[in-house]
Length: 200
Ligand SMILES: CC(C)(COP(=O)(O)OP(=O)(O)OC[C@H]1O[C@@H](n2cnc3c(N)ncnc32)[C@H](O)[C@@H]1OP(=O)(O)O)[C@@H](O)C(=O)NCCC(=O)NCCS
Image (cartoon, rainbow, N blue to C red):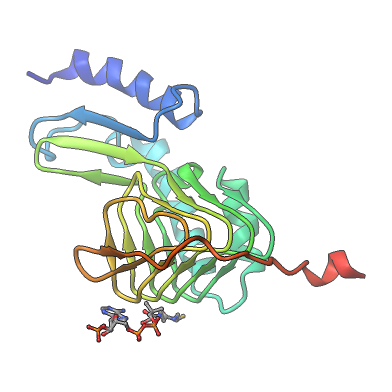
């Protein structure tokens, strides 16, 4: 059974999870039908939370349309995402505005056009929030979808349009829907170029 008391306790666990205190990659909580308010989503946490969410999400979506990465990376970092050097998010790469603090993108990562990084999901009777970790030098193709809780390993490739619900090991390629892992041997040596300002 799930009810208001269970949801209140779960909201505290979710807050600890979001602060990184639980050491877990995935937060799961039975909810009953998604139409019943749980407080996990901004949409059922009152007017002020809703207004803040709409402002944050609206600005993020606007910046994510841009062809250059600087402003969107700056704003994502302000929202708590961990983002390394030489990261490129192509125009319209989409980051879930619900929990951007669950995103980690290491140095030298490229995320293609219209790729989607989801940090939460409602299932018919369960709520999930999960970290997405893109390890150094990995490549996420255009229109790919990464489900919450997924890690793409160092130097790995996610093919265009792949739907990825499981980790992609380092140096491997994930192709298709649902994505299958195609081993490409050991992770190649990855050279992440210095950003221009660091060279000067
Ligand atoms: C995954 C990818 C890197 C593979 O490139 P590759 O190593 O040259 O591989 P190939 O093109 O030789 O294809 C190998 C096999 O995978 C299949 N394949 C390749 N890409 C695929 C994709 N996106 N979805 C489904 N199958 C794919 C090919 O049909 C081929 O199948 P086969 O062995 O049965 O003939 C490339 O296809 C891709 O998706 N690139 C991403 C492009 C992109 O998103 N750019 C960013 C835009 S902003």
